[in-house]
Length: 489
Image (cartoon, rainbow, N blue to C red; front, side, top):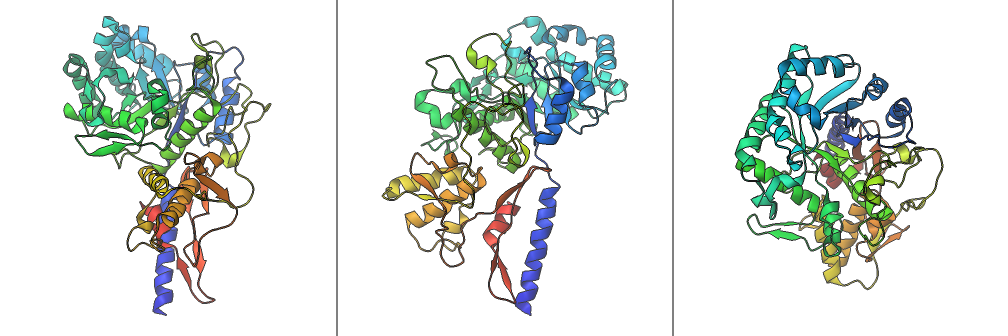
């Protein structure tokens, strides 16, 4: 009776945890650009995003009224942008009030405008008039919103990583001298006062080199060591965010939230540019989606959850510049996916024509990821270190853990590599591990130590959840406690 009562209480805990997670959302946003002559009308875009994807927020680069009307009553939040050239005039309150009356008030709250970004990477323009009026315009627009009775729209501005004079190692991150006190300190004070986030656009793509390819792409690598903190970074993306955080903290504003306004990876480049491929774009953006839905932080911000806007929704055929500029999209104009980034609900295809190289899909039936025969212990240990650094729960293989025995590298690697595969999308490339992993249809586990195979995604709330029951006999059951711990972490 005591055992049954204990199992019953564990079951209640599992159910309550599931219900809590089901009500939690992690914003997956997308930048919706319109520099194309073959793009679908905004009404179709709004319906597609709402009904076919897990995207719950968009960011546009203007205040396009057709788009704002089309997203009314969809529940999708919208971030709008003030044009760079409008910044000086909007430092004047009367001008700001007219701008709000024309571009926000007619649509809000039917269209869930949640944020206004003032300009786009203004600090990189070197335009003194725009830079000097940036913070005053932010304050004035905020005041204009309040005077219009609108209190739930944030005001911020996006930045490239060029705002840092020092970015490596991440703990030494520092804003450019001169701008740190004159621009960023008052800006961060405003953001703190208004509970608005600091917006950054981290692009590992622009830091790509063949030598650092895996570091930029969330793939297994030796990492980059920060001698001041003792942290070894295996992700350029994490290092970028932590460098921004360190710069903010040096000014006394480490408490201000951070939003990722843009990041992504192009799928096609001009010849001779090895960074670009469908596979690289799928890998990078797929990992970003999983990180955001899992609420994974960074080494210096382990408990932070970052609202993330992928760049971009469509390939835009009128964008100037090199080929890559026209190939950042997740989707083609007919809504067919360029590759699978985990954005579509229930594995749906986007519709329209199919074509191009697609990310490999898992084969039907359950599969497990295990090491290939003959792989060295050194390589397997490297796989364990990498997977553990990417958020896999490695407690079960530690001393006293449920999967510590048999105590050998290959057994531990089997558990950890499979855990990574099951929790990072279950695509074939999630079991690559630099060509040391292989998928099998046979569950290699023994006794009741069952390798995880029941990861699912609730698209309505973008929440990862996991159930695993192991039947013990006809009268009692056990709950796999390590996965319950995974849920509650």
